Structure formats: C-alpha cells, structure tokens
Length: 314
Image (tube, rainbow, N blue to C red):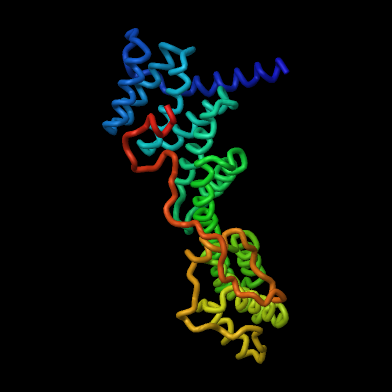
C-alpha cells in the first residue's frame, strides 16, 4: 500500500517536472491576487497569460486550496487556447493528485472534450476519435448522473457517427476493388457497433449488394429485411428493394414513399437506445425517447468566454 502511494507520488512528480518553466519572474504575492489576475486574463481571452498566473499560484502557494483549483483553471486556459495536449496533461495531473475530489468529474470531462476537439475527417487517421470515444464513455460510466455525462452522451453519438463513416469509406473502397469479404466486415461493424448512426441504412444496403455478388441470396434477403423493417422510407431501402427484386427475391417489406422517411436526427433523438429490430418483430422503427436538441454542456463550451468561476462551481 505504501509502495503504491510512493509510486503514484513519483509519477505525479515526474509529470509535473515536464511542465514548462515559469515565465513570470518570481515575486511573492498574495494567493488571492495571483488567482484573480489569472481569472481576469481568462475573461480577456489572454490564455497564455492566464496560464502563467495560475501556475504561479501553484508555485508560490502549493498547499493552498487555490493551488488545487488553479490546476483546472490552467487546463481550461490551455483548452481555450487550442493547446489540447497541455490541457489533457493538466487534467491527468489533477486526477492523479485529487482522484476523489468532486471536481475530478470536470477533469475527466475536460480531457474528453480535448480529444473530441481533435477529431479529423474520416479520410484521415481516427486515433483521436477512438480516444475521444473512450474518454467520453469514461465520463458517463464514472459520473452517470452529472451534467457532464449528459453532454458526453450526445458527443458519443457524434463520435460513433464519425467512426461509422470511416468504416464505410474503407468498406466502399474494398467493394469497389473486388474485396467483397473485407467490405462485408466493415459494413457489419457499422451495423453491429454503430447502428444508431446515419450510416446504418447504407451499410445494410451494401451488405445486400455484397451478398448478392457472392451469391449468398438468403443473407442478402435477410439484410434487406432488416433494412426494410427499420428504415422503410429510406432511399437506401428503395435501392435495396430494386436490387432484390431484380434478382428474383421478394423483399419482406414494401418501401414507403419518400415523405414518410424518418431522417437521422429523428432516429438519433427517438431511437437512441433501441437495437435494430429483427424481421420477426415486423415493426418499423418509429421512434421513442424524445430529448435531443441543445445540450447544456457544463464546461468547457467553446468558444464561450467568461463566467469561468460558474463553470467550475467556484
């Protein structure tokens, strides 16, 4: 137990040692003055100056309550200045030093949002997207009833859509180049892991297309039925319907007119927790839970400026 505590202390100290050297000349000042000056710099949008003053609080008054708060304020200033890796380091440092503190929930959330901000388009490496998903889920699992979890859940839906888009891009490439089995693996990932995203109807259509190419008619018909039951008014089902009938396969569901189509936002806000209904259910996904719309992220809500004390509940 003692050895573990020593290792944690050494680890935190090592992380602290990697921080940049102070840029302010050492001049002993009251903690209240340093902290309020840092907060003032934040309100003015002078992120780097704010970091300097909050770090000075830690340097001159390491055992004060203000020192603990300054770690999070430094992280927030780094976040607002688009210095995401530094902000993540600040959040990790706070978590390492004060894992049981009520403000640890904010540190986890700050870390998750920093990864979220670094997500790139689907044609590039999605490492940051995977990290964002893991960090956002961590927030929800650790603090399920917090305001941070509320926003994290909505961001998880967005991240899932991004990851599904990447799978679809690769799957289409494989399909185009005759690597049908590899393509099926990608489309199945979308259907199995990201089924509430906007890419699911196309993924099911591509599965129909792929299985027909391989001559696996039963699989093609089964995936067409899943598409028809869950998205009867989607254009991708209309295309799947044509494809199946052209191959003398009778689809289980007639396509709806375009006006009856439910869009992705409807599914995201109403069917968030539902899995795709199997054909045996014979029930189109017509929606349930109702809360979508605006999130009320507690913080940091970029590019929001000011009001930082309220953000951290201080």
